[in-house]
Image (cartoon, rainbow, N blue to C red):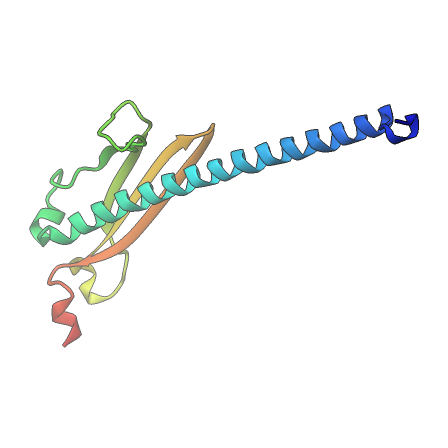
Length: 145
């Protein structure tokens, strides 16, 4: 064998640097991908909680909605990241506010605005989601036909 067929030290260092950059990029891609999936799961869970509370509001009668302290103003739900009922995982805290719709029309007394908010902390960031709807005294069926 001749000495000209071997790799030089500079070529080996450059190849090692390129491999190092490739592994760091691969690791960064995986970690950011997993973080993105986790954020999507947290947002989906928040949306599920909001939807559950909104569907509960639909089941209440007008008297229940307008009765003080019948609808809870605050609640706590858990993430269940392991797929079990593990209450040690982080929690979502929420508020439910029922107030006047703020209209000047004659049916203002027959209409309430419901605002449901959910907030949670993840990765040292505060997140919040919110849904709003209106509830009428006689229900939607009386206004369609």
